Picture 1 (cartoon, one colour):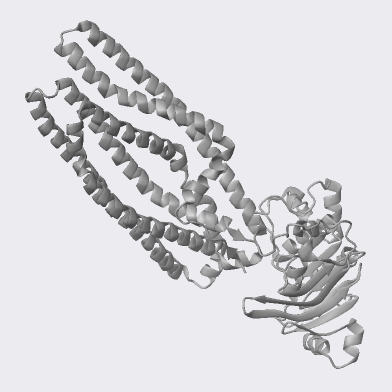
Picture 2 (cartoon, one colour; picture 1 turned 90 degrees about the horizontal axis):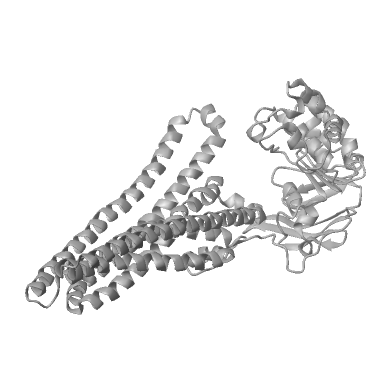
Length: 581
């Protein structure tokens, strides 16, 4: 069972910034630049106020000239520092996204097949695309705005008390209303953005499933039903976004309204103090300039917080995947298998998916170079044997051993280096036939690729294509028939030259003529290798050294083809049912 580590839900942003550790020196330098940008911005209204009092009111052109020059110089420096800040944060943000996406994809490679059986492919793809892409604005602009506006708020708060503490106290009297409104907005917008992220993942999952199964959809004329289901998911996404938009429509104009109220208080009380001679005109102008700088960051931080809600919702989903532990994770002291001989033993093995028992006390042994065929009705546990041997799962009881080593004590990757697998559902990657044959052995030469294809009877149909081995197979091998895809997978397995070979219903998708060609290649494919052959077609398993008959997760009987046919047996009943005609 997959296990998800618990983590503090309130700190996904802190976890995100652990990916900034390799760039901490650059981040510190950018932080210093941000402080300079903030200081320069705070200086502007103070410069204007001083120019009014000591220049205009005092009638000194020299002061006016000096303040204008200083004001222009400060703005130029602000532009330069802002340029450096934007470029630097963009660079760090893109590298963090690159590292996070690589980490997530790498972790997905390590997860067990059960994780993929529990999650929709579209849901997983949404984590890698939509959710990670959602961090872009935060890392490119959001962080620098958060730091800059936070510093500006602190700086302005100190500066307005420095200019006139009485007017500052009157101004901040509206802050409790803003704090209450922000708290309500924070809670409600969090719910809305979380619902939106879940809804978009449902859309991605539905799209992936329907595009992959379009042949079935059209075969059963279910286009309207499929469109209706998509419309329902799309409507849920629209509603979640509409809720977030409504909250923003109430909150952000409210912040502007409070800013206007604050400015009215300043003009009223500040004007009274100027008329009373308790405050200069320059000080009032500087205060108004600082006040605008006070409410503007609050509005920007509120908008940033709105974006942050969506980002945190995405972060939670991404880190939930990263925290998912692989059921087949290697133990800390796991060893690499060296020079595998191919001695396979199932020692009282049991396995269950939750409470659903699939294998119950299964024991058998395959000697090096021996071919074992496993037959039985659907659901007997045949394919589960292969999954345990490949260490896609670990047994819930007993042990699977190769060359005497319990597979739980060895690195799964070192085991699978020696294995070749041909499955019933042949999967070919987008690319050429040559690239797919070479998949398990990237350094293979052209001659070796052709030889492997010729050995399994694939060379003939490949050369019928105008591009030959450079023919593009399209997604999932869509350009090839089921039998042709199976022949390519046989060539892929043969070229990899595995010590352990698994054929899991490998001929189930081919016609009798193609199966006959494959039968001719099987002798060469199986020669000198420890092999497991699983097949419903018993003609495929007759050449095996030994046949294992399974039923309801147990080993019913075993023996050679002739031995099992000589006596009343489950194998004989299966054989007779297939060949009675």
